[in-house]
Image (tube, rainbow, N blue to C red; front, top):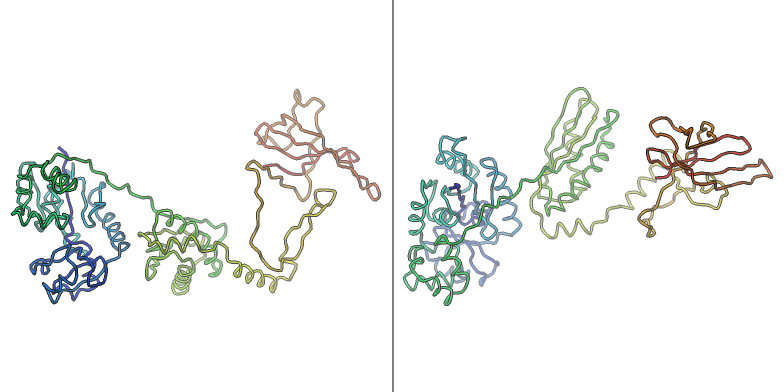
Length: 495
């Protein structure tokens, strides 16, 4: 039978709250659903529990039982972030980790076969417990056979527990008080009034009666405790690291250009994080220095973010401080993400991808340094020849493009500035073959044309017969025969 372990963090959101407010640990403390007197209490510590404050009570009612009760709200995004971090931490002990979807702070681990890597499963459980304690958490590790049995015992005991057989686990689970389990408060309180306070007492009740009186949820709890429901371990798959790399042809030592190159990598990096519903919590920046190896820097924003400007500013500050002993020939960025809030994801989606003001400022600097003619764009004209079909005009201001809808299979014709002379065409194309651009392109297999363009007789007469030439490799070349010069030329490629 497969071995299973449950790692339970008692009142996990409360532990997160007490890490923010450590002075509250000496008082009864609770986590509220809403920060107001009528806000329901969700989790309590042992001091509050001993004072009679249980989950389900209103904050005002809890204060009447424990006047020194301390309470606060823990946002769901913070809980999700810590659950994700603990999942990664527990993967250091077993590859299969399943965090509970219903109860934050409960994890199931696959313990099968680990007694071959550790002296015993007890030693494995103690190593997990020691690691979590060192990280500042209170946790219980129970190794057993079933989800309900290990989880129930983990909520009632502390430290580590290892069951050697299923009967031993079930016997321990039957003695767990019901107020240790995450039950519906009304269901729990009603059972307490009837004198049903342990799992064993609950199992003594008829399942059909529970279904009729308390509904399907109570019936499900009874079946779980009786071992009638079973579900396989469903571990979260390990996600690949989010990484972007760039290799440079020449060593780069200019800080401004390095920042610009880093920005090119950041955009796809953050887009991948958004797809995962995460924000960047840590950025590993690795720079390959020319002939001196790698240099790695860790960038941590004050809070998880998806803002490029903030991250670039941190990268710039770090690079200005460290100084580089040689030029950079490679850049690698690796992001560690944590669950992002809805506001962060919405802001990233609504944030314009193109900053027109920044583009216009960059063009102004180019004009100032190289002259007005350095910033131009092509404008289509009605010229007769391909090279006369456009003119260059100065760019005054950048505007957002307004692309037209185009068919999905539109071809692009790339025109060479200077046509390339080609060897003469054989008389019989099929039998003799025509090798126009070397062996790598192969022979021309078919010609489409001619498409005749002539004119210019008032200056210098031109007569061109254009063809589309298919090669054996599948390329489509745009060639023409210059009849006055009696020569073939390659004028472009179609892609």
